[in-house]
Length: 74
Figure 1 (cartoon, rainbow, N blue to C red):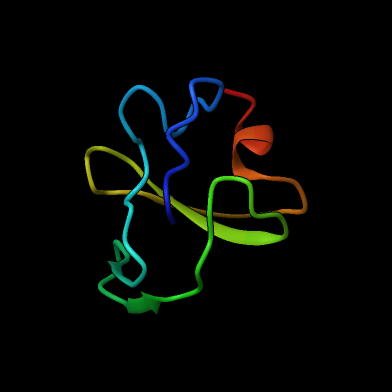
Figure 2: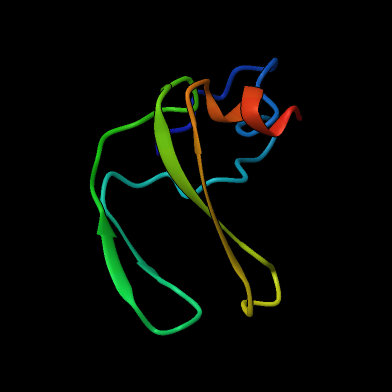
């Protein structure tokens, strides 16, 4: 996901909380590997997302019809 770096964006400013790469290989807690290569930004709508706990023991998979900052209400 590409960061927008706008001051009003809670995901991208002041430091990005998202990985800013065009292709990411995500390794789930159970060892399953998935390549995520869909070009998105923090304003992209209708996405499936993965949140990984900082302890690296839990994954949450969600979907949203609104942008990720709107979904997370940050």
